[in-house]
Length: 204
Image 1 (cartoon, rainbow, N blue to C red):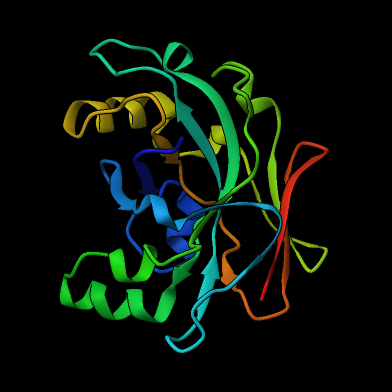
Image 2: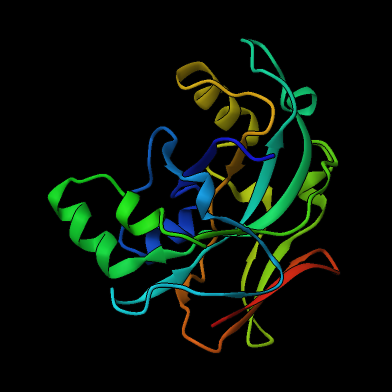
C-alpha cells in the first residue's frame, strides 16, 4: 500500500535549464495525494482537458521499506523501485508559481502519478548502471540516469526523513531529466529500465 507520495523538483540540471529555472541549492520537495497514483500497466488515463497543457515528466520512483532514522542509508531503507510519470498542468503551474501559491493544483490531480510495477532496488552502487527512458508514441523523448541527479538518493532520503518523516509504504519521485513536453489525448507512453519495458499507458 502506498502511503505518502513525495516528489523532488528540479533534480536534473538540464531539466531546470529547459524550463528557465535556477538550479536549487537544496532539494525542492512537494507532495501528491495518494489518490493521484494509478498503475502504469497498459492503462488508459483520463487527464484534465480544460486547464491548459499537460506535460509528462518521467522519473525513478523509490519505495521506503522501514521507518527513517538519522544515519540510515538508502540501501537499508529502500527495498523496491519503479518508474513513474509526474503529469503536470504546466499552464496552471506557471500561474501559481508567479503568485507564490502551492503546487497542488498543478501536480496533485487524479491520475497525475502513474507508477509501473515495482522491481527489486539494485542498490545505490548499481542503480546508475542502467538508464531509464520515456517513449512517447514509440519515440524516445527522455533518457535519464541516477548519476546525473543534482541531489543523490541519499541526500533526498536524508532531507525528507529529517524534516517530514519517512516510513514503510512511502514513495519518492526522484526528479525528471530534460525532455519534458506536452501529453495529448491519444498519446501513448512507455517507460523503460535499461532494455526492459516496465509499463505503458495511453491518454484517453
